[in-house]
Image (cartoon, rainbow, N blue to C red; front, side):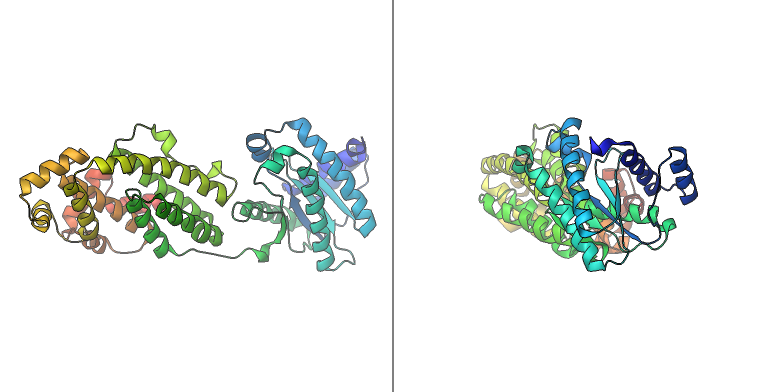
Amino acid sequence: MEVYNKEIFCRTMIVNEALFGQTEKQLRMMMNEVETELNFDFHDFYLCLTGLPKKYYTAELNMNRKDFVRIFEAFIRQIHNQARRDEIEMMHAVINYDGSKQIAFLIKKGNKSEAEILAFAGRIMEILEAEYQKDERYQRSSLANFTVLSSWICDYSALAATFETVRKLSRMAYFDMRPIVVQQQDIPEGKGDWKRIRELFEQIELLIFDKNVRKLELAVHELFSKEVKLSYNFDLAYAVINDLNRLTMKLKDQLNLELPSAQLLFRLERYFSVEETEKNVLQLLRRIHQEAAADYQRMSPITQQVLAWIKQNYMREIGLQEAADHLGLAPAYVSRTFSRDLKVSLSAYITRLRIERAKLLLMETNMKIAEIADNVGIVNRDYFSVLFKKNTGMRPQEYRDFYRQ
């Protein structure tokens, strides 16, 4: 077929070489070796990256190489025809060094305005999206063709670095999975509201034991739809996932969940969008909520009251006597009841809660160790350090340094 004739094949190969750092001189030598002309101005063009990464074809859509070639051939023919109609010169390549199956276009600027180049990139996106839509598997998915257009490239030496930047930008589809064309200046530099994120995590942990699962769903939805999605910040997304993993592991111990640890851990790389991540997180938290609700109902009213009181007061020096005084009951009775229901002593539960809170403060703030110790209800810094190492295997500063590497 036309897509695989010698000239197009060679030009495609050359674009791949150029994108991954081959020098212009070596490029032209290669073209001479394969006896193919390369009439393209490498000092006046734009770079466009489009198409779904390989993992979406294989893992999400269950497509094979034959499916990809079918879509690719129809798409390339249409794009070349469109380029002729728009009087635009271009070269394309399938990014095959890392098996991504994305498609790169070098679009010559010539006498075209940036608006005209952007419009052409939009037509590239629309044509490929239409080809994807012909497949029922794609129609049933939540995937969309996210296309990135670089800024103007005036020198060949900038191509490889620009390509790396565009590839990173294409990952932003995770935050905005819809068929659009974006440029580098379109991506906001969001940081996220860490204070609100911590508040939501505290809510989620408490709502695991709330009878109304809708409250839990709303808190998780706000966490992802507002804080993660609007941040365009992968560091924030990874931090949220790590905190969720700590929460699920904590709940596994607290509730004696029989689920294997592997099923309780989230991996950001598994998900193609914020929405898919939220869906998977909610699915697991609903399941944990069911077990927690049943477990909570089995607890005596005394244990339920103690848990609520601890969560409100663990930031100061408290213990069994204070809990018993709060309830107006004998300490021995409160201790026996609490240990029977949670399979852990009251003091050990308070310590675990304090250590988890200290971990978050060490990772997400620049508070001094003594301030963190005081914030979680342990006024003696040395004792806090000993307790922290006993529970985590690292001293507080070591933990902070390790997390921030």
